[in-house]
Every structure is written in C-alpha cells, then in structure tokens.
Length: 385
Image (cartoon, rainbow, N blue to C red; front, side):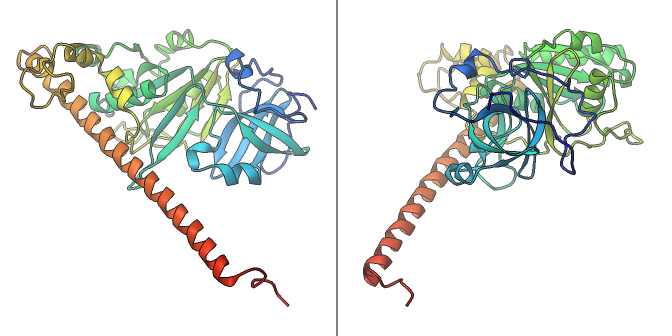
C-alpha cells in the first residue's frame, strides 16, 4: 500500500461531486511539504498512508489523498487516547489512514499541527474548539454594510496570530456603501494600528475579486473567517466559478443570511485550497495571551518604557501605555479593547488550568476507589460460577 492509496467512492456519504477539486492531486498539491515529511517518523507506520481531512460533520470525516476523497472513521485506539476534542482531527489536519474497504478508511494517527484556528468552546464550557488546521493565510471577512466592527476585527486578528497564521482583512459588500464610507472604514482600520493586508471587494459587481485571486498560491491553504451572512460562501462560489456552496439572498435590509453548516476544504482550479467555516456567534479567547500581545504590538512597544516590568497598564504610576492614552497617542477604543481581550484570555486560562487539575484529581480518585474495591473483594471474587 502506497501513500496515495485513498480511493474515491460513490454512495450516500460520498463527497459532493461539485467540490471543485481536480480529479488528480499529489500530496504536495494538497499541502504536504517538508515540514510534515520531517514529522512522519513515529506517525506513519508500514501499511498505512497519508491523507488530509477535508470535512468534519458531527463526528463523520472525509479525507483526501492522491486517489481521491473517501469517507473515514476514527480508530477505537485513537478515540480512546484522545484526551479531548482538540486532540481529534479537524479540517485541514494531516492524518494516517488504513483502508478498511473500498469506500472507507480508518484514521489511525494524526500529524502535528503547523498552524491552527481555535476558539474557546461556546457557552460556559472552558475548553478549546478546533476550527481548522494547517492554514497559510486567514481571510477575515467583514461586511461594509452591517457587520463592520473594529472590536470584532481585533478579536479575529488575535485568533489568527495565536495560531501562527498570517491574516488578510477582507471588506465585502462594498457595493452597498459609497466610496467615502469605504475610505472612512479603511482609515479607521489603519488608525487603530492594524497593519494587515486589506482587500475590499464586491461579490455582486466582481470588484476586488482579481486582487484577492492574486493572493492565492497553488498548494497553499486559506480559510475564511467571519460572522454569519458576510458573504463567505458567495465569495468561495465566485472563486470556484460555480454555485458549489449553498447561499441565500440577503434579507430585505441588505443583511446577510447564514448558510454554512459545516467546515470543509475545497480546491480551486488554480491549485489553492479554501476552507469555509460557519459564522461564529461566539469567539471566546482561551490560551491567547501571545496572540493579544502580537495583535496589539504597538502597546508592547510602549510597555518597554513603563516604570515596572510587570506593569498591567491599568493603574500603575509611570505606565507609558496610560501616558500614551492621556496624550492621545493611543486611542481610548484601542486601549480599551486590549485590556478587555487580555483580561478575558487570562480569566479563561486560569479557569482552564483549574478544570484540568480537577479532571486529573477526579481521575486519580476513581482509580484509587477501583483499587480499594478490588482489594476488598480479593482475588477471584468477581468470577461467575
């Protein structure tokens, strides 16, 4: 069995024939480079092969290798050793598979992640939710009409930075605002200290689409992040040149309507790969302290002049950050969002550590209790006669 031994198939769980993927792709075409090859030892065993996860939907998987896309399931061992959801494969992850039948492979192992998009699990749960992995650039999409929000943009930029992904800001639906409004939005982004590349476009008129296409390189993976209804699925359809993804007309107010229900990886004719993601109502930060500092690097530069090395930039005397706010060199909004995001990730980080410790303590308790019960019963007491 060779590394390309992943067959395509037909059946009720077959991949969408409109996927836009070319019929023959090498592992390198799919993004498997030297970084992953160097880490294959200890993951790839004789008789197994390499594939990439292209879709995840409520525990069901599709993976793609050099011979096509097929349905996949987790091995019992992998499901058992995974400590939590983030340890399981997500879209974009490279995996090791073993063929069970012509239309099913078993995922036996996972490669390390080079980059990732993750968030705090929605609701009160304190844990990670992996969105996608092994992404080169994240297109952070905001609609110029209703969705434009600098604070939300900062939050997405932190997520990209924390995962080691280069962000690109995409302003969609520019046909719904006049040029002066668009110019003001772009100006506010730059004034906020956000230096990421920026593309303004319209899915309706096609303006700006060629500029975005120019950023897409063969063998590289891109994901689209943003709120529901900002036009992510429509944008992917424009790039694919077909109505592959289901979309809905905007509402009577011009506001977008959510359509994407699962994460999946699609391949363009150019060889670039795109991951569409459902709109996220919640984008909580967990384990994102470094991402916050990277995204607000100008505050980090100012912090070097603070009187105290452990300055929190909230109340200490001699704080260079507070001085910059008072002098108007750093906007109140930018500073306020920095403090909010920093406090949020610190709070959830502490809660996560405490939860992990409680889980470990509970596990030790159950193990000790079982040993005590076995000792009381003595040898052979559980046997049936």
